[in-house]
Image (cartoon, rainbow, N blue to C red; front, side, top):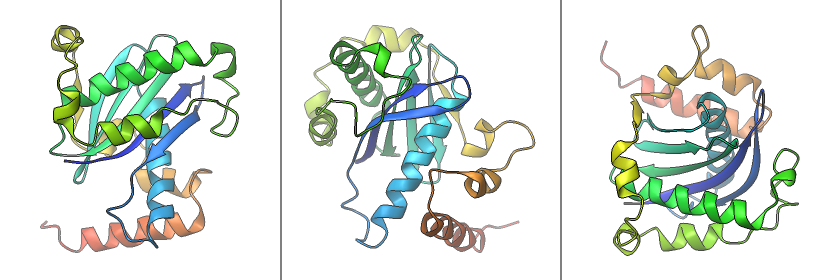
Length: 198
């Protein structure tokens, strides 16, 4: 069980704005880390853009699950974990981080903020603490709320995208991804597609 990324974003009218992020990329090779981090940032922004306000969702992409919560005030958070990590603990973490962030950072700074300008240091601590879900499992104060909340599980990122759009096209257009990350995505896509049974 592993958490790879924890991000806080502001959902704007047309795009999501990354406010702060923390990553644990120790399981990836040194040379892949920057590309993987860029792709996680891109995926987090895309998921927040496509999630309606006041809702939670889980999106499955290959062996990863991206859990998202966008509050009614347009503040959202995304955690990227492996398939084994408990979903309830992820949503508990997202609730805690968003509550803490909204108390420490003024909402006026959300639309124009960036990771460099936002003063919030707790993401790395939370990402490290929640690597072991058993430590965080005692925090069940939102369990009743989560049981009542409808959580939508999308089988792939493709189902999250609007009709007629493809993930490949969005990767090509993205300003969040560098050329090396785009090449990494295309290579990974080719490697994975050779093994599919038609």
